[in-house]
Every structure is written in C-alpha cells, then in structure tokens.
Length: 137
Image 1 (cartoon, one colour):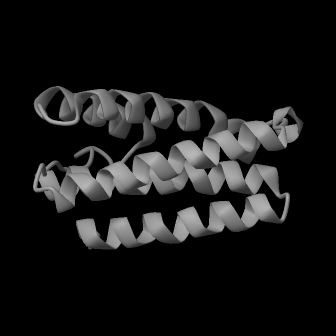
Image 2: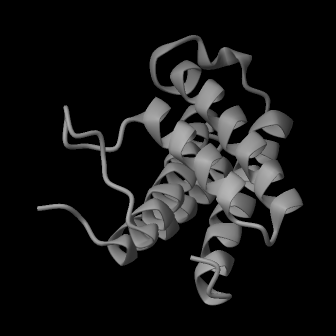
C-alpha cells in the first residue's frame, strides 16, 4: 500500500529530528543520511499531494526520478520560484552527499559541512510544508 502525502511528511519530520540528533551526537554520516531522507520524504509527500505517481516499473519513488519530478514541479509553480530553485539546489547537494555518508568514505564530512547540509534539509522540509499551508499544492 502506498503511503499518503501526510505519512511522507510525518516521516520527513522524524528524519529531520534524527538528523539533528545525529549531528548533536557528532555522528556526521548518520546526520547527512537522515538529512537527505528528510528532504526526499518531504519532496515525495508534495509530489503525491500534487497527484504524481511513483515509477510504474518499480512502484517506488526512486532517488533520481524524484529529483527530476521536483524540477518539473518547480517549473509549474509560479509562486516562490526563487525559494523553490534554492530548495532544488539544496536537495541536489544532499542527493550528492548521501552516497558518501551511506556507502563511501564519510571522513570527508566536517562538522561545518554537515551543519550546512542539515540546515539545507530543514529549509527544503519547511518550504514543502509551506507550499501545502499556502495552498500552492
């Protein structure tokens, strides 16, 4: 059964909390991974609310496909264009960092870099919530 957009947004909040907690515990790789998933889950929630569907071949929301669908959404929403483009860049930064956190040499992460990534994830999540609250989606 596919999750509702509300369930995705709830997961996003939980992942954001986990990212912040991991950062406070100086578990930088976990903070990056959770920050990415917070953004991914918020974007997925927005896409579902908008009526988008996951990849029909797999039945799930792939990471690359979600990036692409988010770009399409940004082109279609006239309000908040500057903030949405910035969120797209933040989402992309997180997308590029996550493989290092989950599968690669996570020693590349500094506390400052991870603080910035967690902050960027928070901005993506907040903007996605704002789109819903303002009726843009």
